[in-house]
Image (cartoon, rainbow, N blue to C red):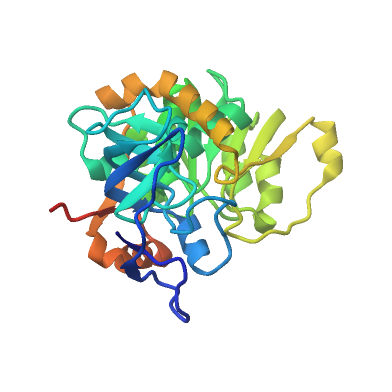
Amino acid sequence: MRAVLPEAEAPDFLPRLGELPDPVPGPGEVLLDVRATAINHADLLQMRGRYPPPPGESEVPGLECAGVVEAVGEGVRSWSPGQRVMALLAGGGHGEKVAVPVGQLLPIPGGMSFTDAAAIPEAALTSWTNLVAEGGLQEGETVLLTGATGGMGTFAVQLARELGARVLAAGRSRLRLEPLRELGADALVELGEGFVAEVRDVTGGRGVDVVLDLVGGEALARRLKILAPRGRLVLLGLLAGPKTEIDLADVLRRRLRLIGSVLRARSRVEKAELVAGFRAFADARLADGRLRPVVDRVLPFDDIAGAYRALREGGVGGKVAVEMSVS
């Protein structure tokens, strides 16, 4: 099969396509004929050697895909060849075929394209894991989402809306945030010097119950300031760096919780539990369009380097998807 080779060449660290052996589905796995995939920041980090896959998983990058079941491994009864599915992956999505644990498969709703489906799993399960499993978001609470214009953020806005929360979308450009109102954002907040005051203003001085933070760095201290008493900040990215200084006395006094979260490194058992929980809530909502992916652009597999470059250069509103050629 053709796939992105695990090693990238400096100085660009862009992916190169090459020939690799077809994967073989093991017990409890299916083999997918990949029809589309998507690009995530984790893929950019992996190409730079900074985010290797978990032990035993494919070294080909790619954390999500959509395709058709080609074969099933030993013990698989719930899926069969010919079914259209999307998949959450620990690696391997940027190849023409991938072996997937059955617990990480989701059905593609009728009428949904492979490119739209490929843009769902990582964004959806990251949103579900951190809003629900880690953040404990409840109906009637207020959540603030950083990185809200990206692939995960645009899905998280919708998911939080469907969970019955009030949604504040945060970013550096109010103009770029504006389309999020249509997805369910109740208020838009610009990151910057006036961030804390603006959040306090739109929440009547109370603050927010949950923050999803993809940024980290020195700005983390400001995120903690906007939490309501007993608020939770879920940290799932370090785009601004891994270090900061925070007021621990304030954390104690207001009984705040700072929660670190990853998805890729979780066990297959834990991922299957998260996928099952998400499916129970979201299958009907995906089918009728209440939840949908936001795809910024679709590039051909032959230009997957261009897809990586687009995400790296920024300014993307939603996901960058890649479509395989179908013979």
